[in-house]
Amino acid sequence: MPNTLLFYIIFISQIGLISYYYPKKIVAKMNLIINNFPPENYPKLYPESLEKVNAIQRNYLRLNFIFLFIGIALLSYFGIFAPENTSDNYFEGLPLMYGMLQFSPMIYLELLGSKQLKLMRNTDNRTNRKADLQSRRLFNYISPLLLGAAIFMYFTFLISVLALNNFVFTENIIINIVTLTAVNILFIVIAIINLSGKKRDPYQASTDRDTQIKSSLHSLAFVSIFVSIFIIIHTLTNRYEMNYLEIIINSLYFQILAVFGLGNLIRNFKIEETNFDVYKAN
Image (cartoon, rainbow, N blue to C red; front, side, top):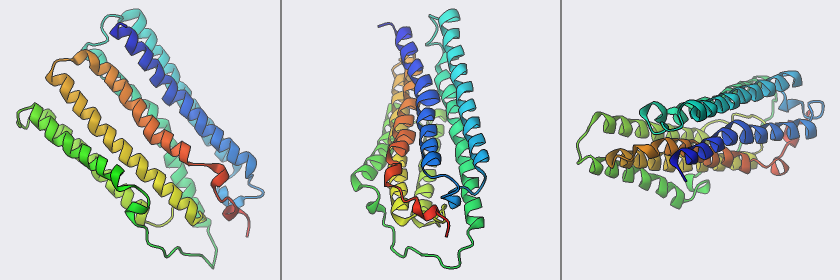
């Protein structure tokens, strides 16, 4: 199969997976919650009006449809104007730049979700509250094997990129090391906040919070592993002058992040196993 045709297939998958399939899954979950746990019976779940929630949902879908059409337009451009140039430097970074745009609606949803949780905390006027005194231990939420794999891949990345460049610290090597180290430090901070920080949702049941922490830590570990692998593969393609593969690798990278990051969170959030009674009126 020609590399150009292979890229088209993979890029179509990136467009559909991140800008259509997962947004559709997320909105379906939101609608299921709204339909089964309406504000009149579960008022604590809605710190703002249902109209506001529906407006957020519509804006989220609009953003995804905008990026869906942008992806289709980019694909059309490739097919019409540049069928033989998909390995040129001009195109190699396209899946990465487009992938970052595709994830921006999730950032929008996360920011507004954080605002909703803050409103929940501000309106929580209970005088008697239950505190979970059980300490949260790291390995109660993530297996040592998975955590060890993430650490192993980080050090494999360090050794690999240095060995492939004869242990010479070039500008690209320094940027890669600093970037991946900063990403992993950020993940560690997020993990610590999850394990020891206060509940973002003041009403959330302890078992649901444990499930959320477990899902979050697993997603962070998987993403860390695949970012390490991605940079190693990129270094190999540059070292052995296989630049024609970079545009395909860049597209696959974001799809893997979506499947093991966003997809993992969606799969682990099971509405039927969540305790929504905590959101009922007192």
